[in-house]
Length: 406
Image 1: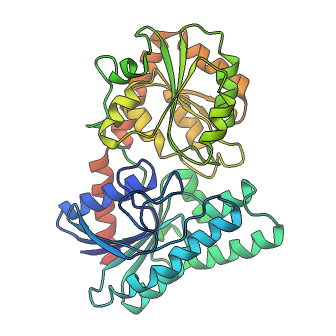
Image 2: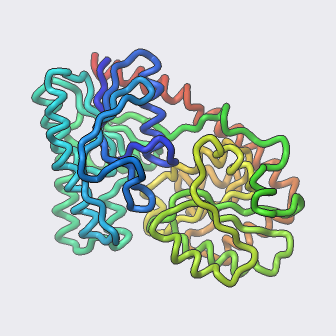
Image 3: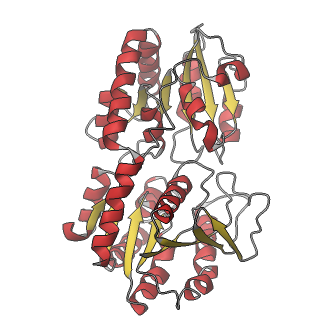
């Protein structure tokens, strides 16, 4: 099968969407499928093109059995709603020549990820002209999230953009997304069950396992062996509710055996560091390479997963799979009726989003009850093994791809 993967996020060295796309591409290529990727030079999460890449050039590389074509794009120094739209539009335009260059290759499936939805019109047109199947995978509902978070405003604009989104979604042969709640939202936007596919985020449960001894990061950070570590690891952006982390650390600065570690990069990191500047119980780390992810997640005694209330129902955080695989309990900002809230209720504690006091109380409860942490960590690991095993998820995805082509 020939699969063309088309989207802005492809940086397998990272976590999140880029990592999942990279692992999917490598896994399918190892199974003998012919995979090509049209993407941008990596620039996330710092909004700066990585060394060794160029924002203004086309480039081609071989990667783990797949062909990766990188196209130019504009990366704003300061991210605003309007500049983000221009940034996405720049990739949508500059990637069209690379898309048309695949004409004679003639893929069986054109697979595009949201975000960004900007690539969808070109992907649909190319797929129809070449008699290929068009597949949209939704990691985030970016249109809904942009309005809920205030990046875009206005009822008339929202109605117009939502109508365009529904019109695009109706034209895809398959639409997949990562959680039951997000599948329900796809249905509400006019996607029939016959076109809807579940493709949850997965974890390499073999590589990310509960550590049998202390994480080497404890020694590197100078954290005592008997201290309880509350870890946030992931992107530091607008949807994460980072301001809550500083409030929690401030409320719990009198807890002598509790240490906070905030690991990641992104537009919100500088502000979070400024809020925590006077707190001795907080340490910051840069994003770690994938080969150290197991040790990083194993550093935690408690994982922190804040979510902004206005985005909590729109996303199923990709970082959750690694947290559960590490065999550690999670404190998540999620309403109990949401899917995230239900998972957190089994594998940790779910509290109301944006409620720093409730979040802090949950952290103290777990920090002072090691047996409860152990029991919830066992549940977390079992849940990851049952629901998020990478090979099982991708094998089902491969079958879904083949059924789509047939």
